[in-house]
Length: 163
Image 1 (cartoon, rainbow, N blue to C red):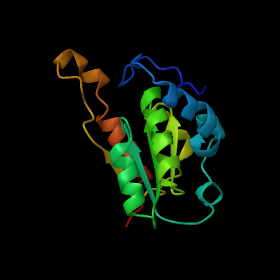
Image 2: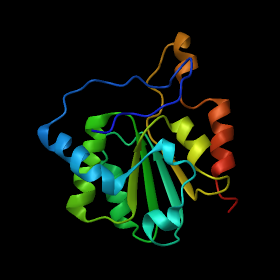
Image 3: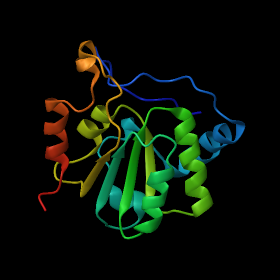
Image 4: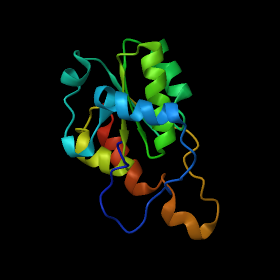
């Protein structure tokens, strides 16, 4: 079963929760990961090969259980979507939904978003980036854990298409 991928660093913007994984989520991770999963170790993405076409690319960071991402991918079949999540039950849920809705325009990582952005996306390769509810770290002492920080914003801007 795939596990979250990340490079060593001092501080992360997330904590991998050990929440309960259902049997169907486990089965989905094991059976469907080869079809829809992406690995940090694959390096730069060749989206034309992954999706068998060239289309504008949308990235969502932290999709949770994947419901909204699946809805968006189904509603916009002319776009390709990539999600990044570190919570394995959420990834299992997303994989189930991809298969159930027969989506061909959605793939996912179980990885640290900053690592994926640095190593897998070329500059100016993303049409849209979606981050909903990014910072569950309310205390001042947690500032270093927040996802939305100047260094990440610079990285995101560098990956956005100029148009």
